Image 1 (cartoon, rainbow, N blue to C red):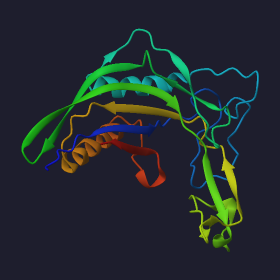
Image 2 (cartoon, rainbow, N blue to C red):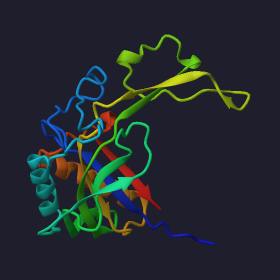
Image 3 (cartoon, one colour):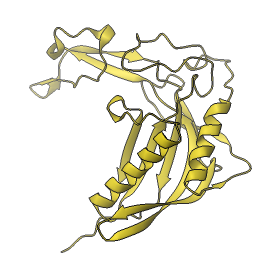
Length: 223
C-alpha cells in the first residue's frame, strides 16, 4: 500500500525584543547568561502580578503577518493555555487561540516541480517557557552553572538513576511568535523549503536571528 505524506508545520520564533513579552525583564542569551538572572515576579508567576503586553513584540508579529499576506484581526485576545511544564512557573502559558493576531495567509515556496503555495492558518503571540537541565550520575564533571544543554537521563536496569533537575527561568516569558501552516506539504523537500523560506523572512524582517543551534527558532511537524 502506498502512502502520501501530509505535513503541516508549527514554527516557534523568539522575537528580538529587548524585554520579555509581559514584563520588563531583559531578554538575555539563554546559552551564555548566568541562570535565573533575568527573572521578576511577573515572569516567575508570583500571585497578584499583572502582565503588560510588549508593544514591540506586537509590532514584530505584525511585520511577519503582513509579509505572509495574513489578514490582521482588529481585535486579538490573550488567553491561558493550562498545562503543566516544570519550567513554566505560572502553571499556564499566556497565548492566543480564538482571536489570534492574524490569520489566512500564504507562502509561495520553490519545489523540484516548481512553485507551490502553502497556506498559513494563523500567526499569534505567546510566551516561551524556561529551560530544564537534568543532572544524573552520568554527568560527572559537568558544571551546572554553565550548562547550556539538557543532559539526557541515564538508566540502570530499566530505572532512572539518582539525580536532580535545574530550572533556568531566563527564557520564561520571552516573546514567542507562532506561525501555523495548513497541512499543504507533501514531501520532506517541500517542508524543508517552507522552513528555509520562513527563516529567511524572519531574518530579513530583523525579528529573529535564525540561530537554530540556540533554539531561538524551532519547527514542529504534524504528519
